[in-house]
Structure formats: structure tokens, C-alpha cells
Amino acid sequence: MNDLLVQPPLSLTEDVVVHELAARTRLTESTVLVEIGGNAGRAWATRLGVGAWHSVDPRNAEGINGQVTSWCAKGEDMPLGDNSADIVFSCNAFQFVNFGGVLRDAHRVLRPGGILYSHFGPIWSGPDGHQLEYVQYEGRELRFWSDTLLPPYAHLRFSPEELRSVLHTAIPNSLADALVWHIHSSTTINRLFAEDYLDLVRTSPFSIREFVLSDHLDYAIETPRYAHELLEQEFNLRELGAATPCSMHKTHQLGVRDVRMLLQKPGH
Image 1: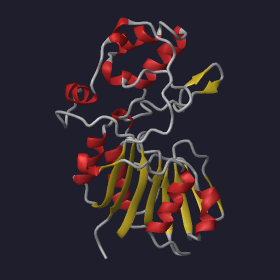
Image 2: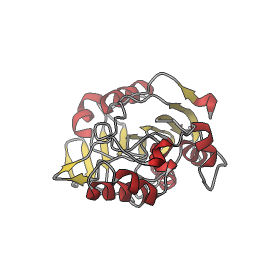
Image 3: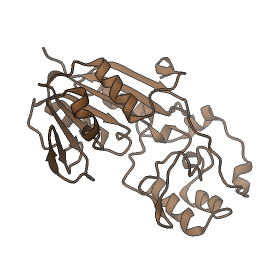
């Protein structure tokens, strides 16, 4: 894993990731592009000059608007035919999906030689361990980059019960309980480490053209003033990675925050 880690930050906005996609592939009026997660096609399909843009997301409202077709569906069960797409693209969605299932279905819908390009965060390897867009509190959705409510690596350092007791010292119990449930029980995040993503890619039928990692964090983790003896215990990232149980690896390289991935389906 160390040889894959790059220090400069990877792209952190959807617009930049779309530009990177356009720079890496040939987009024409005949291109069929499938986006997993979100609906960027409404803004980009015409500007990029693609023939058809399919947006696949279980939160989408289905419909057709010019070149863009929106599907209410999961990325592992795309409503497209075999060998029907030139490109599968995703930005900041693969931490929310059944990644192995998405790889299998992306391989199915891509034509031989087609590419899968994605940027995403393996959040279980990162310091926050969650993404809060699905958590509502007092009438608003939380944002992990501004609502930095958890001490770094709390999802790995503490059991759910321990974490709840830490959080109860500084924030309302209802908010603490919502956070603990989301981190450890919610089905909206997949809890894969960076190594797990790489293993699933390596065992897939795809050829790997790019798989690079970054430990850059573009926001400050400023937590409330928790007063708990568990926080007085010092921890080391290397030791924490070695102590974290997982079915595939004996140790994990913690601190990985972002992944850029370019895969290709073998063929002409």
C-alpha cells in the first residue's frame, strides 16, 4: 500500500473530477456514460458532448431530460443492458455502496475496452470514519467536514458503548446516540478499508490503469471539549491499524482519505 500513497491532495470536488474524466478519455456524441451516485449529467452532459448520460442513484427521481436519463436504482443493479456503455463514472459514492457488486455490474454494462473512473473516500481508513449526509439533527443534515463531532479515529479506537460514553460528556445524548448508530449500524456506509477496495479491484476482471491514494485532509477536525478518561490514552496509527480486526488483512494503513481509480474492461 505504501507505494500507492501520494502526498498531494487528489481532486475533492465533482467539477474537477469530471474534468479529469474528460482528460482521460475520448468523449463524443456516440459516448454512452453511466454515472453511479448523484446526477451530475444535468450540468455536464451537453458541455462534455456525450451522446447519452445515465445517472444511477437510489435517491434519483426517474426521468429523461435531453441527453440525461435518471434511474432510481443501485449501482450493483443498473437498469442497462450488457455491453451497452463506454464509461462508468462515479464521484464520492463508492463509500456508500456494495463495492464488489458495483464492480461486477460495471463490468457487465461496459463494452470491451470500456473504462470505470472514480474518486472516492475509504472512510473507514480515515480519521472521521463516517459521512453524515444521511444524519439529520434538529431539522438539518449534518456535514462531516463542518460537523466534526468525533475525536480522530474514534470509530476504531472505541467500542460503540465506549464511544457513546465519550460523546455524552459534551453533546446532547440524542445527537451522540444518532452518531454512534450511524457509524456502527447504519447501512448507508460500507466500512471498507483502503486495502479492501484494492483487494476487490485486484480480484475483479478489470485491468488496473490507476489506483492512487492520498492522506490529505482538507478540513480541520475540531471536536467539542470531551472530558473522558478514554481520551487520555495515547494511540499510534500504525499500532491502531495492526490492532484493528478485519477478515482480509492483519493490519491496515490508516490515514488514507481519498482514492483515484481508473479501471478498464479487457477487450478491443
